[in-house]
Length: 100
Length: 77
Image 1 (cartoon, rainbow over the protein chains, first blue to last red):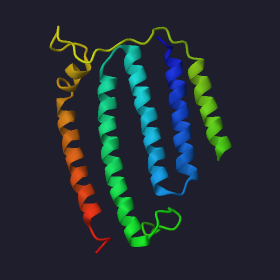
Image 2: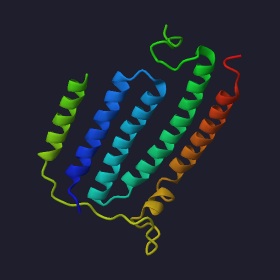
Image 3: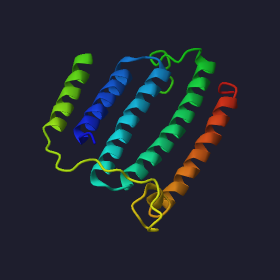
């Protein structure tokens, strides 16, 4: 068995990669993929601590988080498709109709 | 930006590495059939968290209907 610190370090790396993608990229789909990477980092933390404490609740929460991520991705992609139809682009710098 | 994210990763990874983990990782079975309220993932999922499963099912159904509606609509018309 590998120590939990390895999994937590991998989770931190995933979170850092996702955060970098959210902060730097302008393409909405890549930003959505980066958000999914951040969610996967959280799921990996849940599974690691569930295995460490021998409690299945963390794995149950991981399954529920994966289901929520699937719904979020479906709605997000549908929104981006609608935005592309109306604006012709999904560049987040050019799509500013949600600003006030 | 890259430097800040890398610094965040280094701080988190180092703080995790310096923690003394006394135990080790365990194998959690998918289903524990020896005890109905045992320590399996399916036992917890359909036992303690059955209401959450129903809520997630409703959320996924709403997301599916909303996604189809948004995808089929003609660009805000």
